[in-house]
Amino acid sequence: MKKTARVIITSKCDRKCPGCCNSKLDYTSLAKVIGGITALKDYEEVVITGGEPMLNPDSLLRFIKALKKQNKRQRVYLYTACLSMDDYGKILNQLDGITVTLHA
Image (cartoon, rainbow, N blue to C red; front, top):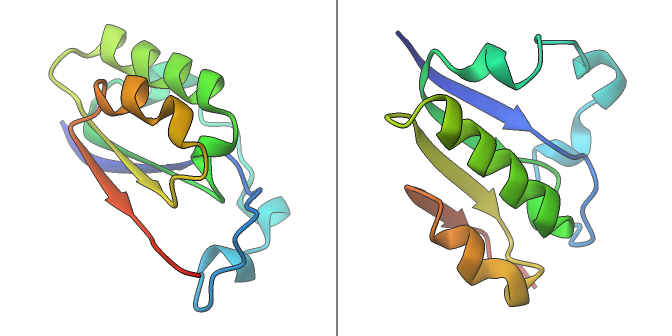
C-alpha cells in the first residue's frame, strides 16, 4: 500500500501568510488528472491542503466522506488556517488529524 498522498484541493487563500510555500507554486504546471478520488484509495493517509481548504467547507466535507467511504482504514489529515470556524466542528469529526497555521 502506498504511504501518503498530498492533495491540493484549491489554490485559493485569503491569508497571504509570510513564508507560504504554495504562494510560489505554478498551479497550471501542477495540474494533472489522477483518475479521480478512486486513485487515492490505496494510500494509507491523505493530507488535504491548498491554498485554504476551508474556503469551501461543504465540498471539503463531501471529499473527506468520500475518501472514508472507499477506504475505512485510510487516515485523513487537514492542513488549514481555519478560515471558516463555523464549519470546523463537523469537519474535525471526520479527520484523523489537523495542522493549523496561525499567521496574522
